[in-house]
Image (cartoon, rainbow, N blue to C red):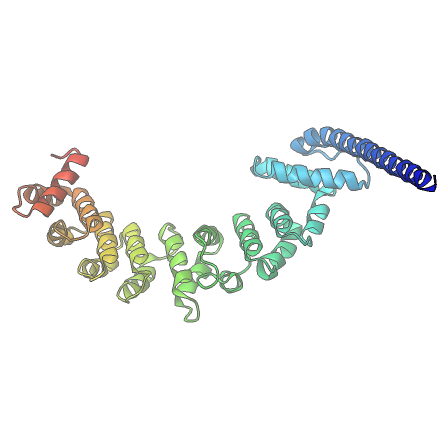
Length: 343
């Protein structure tokens, strides 16, 4: 009998625990739904006001700051110019910037990254985002914060940024070229100075070179002189240097390009061929014609492209190669002429 009573009591206990659990779940659902409803109501109140740049009266509400911060993140990429200025004003008034600054201290790297990217829009918080760009433990967060600051024209000095981000050493993302392009827009001389800093790695200098090559903000003569010297060094960066020389098209780089056409590296021969075509280097036509018979397909392709770019002299060389006894050169020339509609 005692055993049956014990089993009965245990069953009642289990039922009580289950009822308490169900009651807890129902209560949590009510609380969650209420919180979501209040959040949605606050969102409907803030959204039109922030889009118009107005500052609704929401008091010193933690919910309002949180919702405003989220809206700021959503709207940041959608507005520009005066609309962005209005958004920044409204977001500041509603406490969004304060909330984003709090998120910069989050233990989650993604939260810090998103907050830094949005907070870069706020001039008063540029020092806080700069601190993240230079000192955050996550390299992805540092790079994201630096990119956001550079896009807003508020990045720290280029040399300091390159060192702190480890550009060319620990950081080799292609985004570093985008960063350099933004830095060139606000301080091209500082980016150019990176080329002559002996302590910086070549990869960082090459990212600066790519950015400067697309900009007319600096005197290209010393830039090309540095590139021509770097092109003569045996390194994995040579192909990119030759492509940059081609984009610049400066006469000071012509000798380096002609030398590159004779390189033992097929990657260098290919990029030098491309550079010859882009920089209208007609003196390269005889050598480019010879490269139509190169062992590497990519070299032949780039040489054909370059000849097609080099006016009548280049096209004449292609037509002659198209009847050349050498089958490789003949095939390369015919392919180029057909692709360009010059056959």
